[in-house]
Image 1 (cartoon, one colour):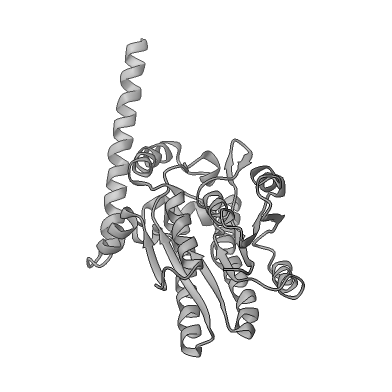
Image 2: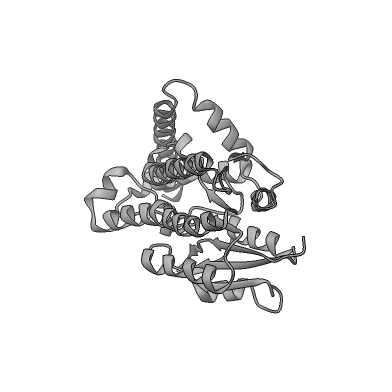
Length: 307
């Protein structure tokens, strides 16, 4: 391959004690594409300083980091237009924008913080990536080629009570992405739209900033006691997903919908069981109550021992 491929990649930075760091699928993917000299990578995100620290120019000469807020719809459309008109366009768009906010559904609509977080979930997880896809498509159609890769989620096949709002935001984007795929296929535009449904990644955690205000502390502690060990035990290395993304970009994977990770494949298979979403919700809720009871008992025993 003798020409330069341009990849536009959006990823989010994960919060940790009010600091931001680059981790997970985003970093692994940029590093995988940066191994190939024929790629120029536009690595974009909300925190430009962290992008520059993660991908210094002397180590990543092919990576061009710049700030992009996926919620700034009009500016983002202008950015895509600028890249196509001034830099020759894009060969690959990787849509990896996403945030996770957890808590009971009633809290998302009963407090100002909950309403704001609910709005942000749908803007960042669905509407923003949809606009980036639409803006890129308008140019790729004219050229008759290009690949758009949308990162989805397996959460809508595992609908536990803290993550219902997050799951719905990702489910909506999944439906939109599939509709765009079918439209491009019918039109035979030459543009590939591929959806990646990954499972859990083992090097990310649920931190305090992921929970909305008003979530009962005991319920939150119990849910994390369930979710964190599962992520550590069954989660995959982010490099696994990064390699799949690279294979899709290079045309080595031809599928339009790819499930990555054993837990993602299992949850998808189980979703064919009639009533599975309700079964999973009730099961997780019951397990949460059991863990809450265990935590209360442990606290009572510790208190008695101290006395």
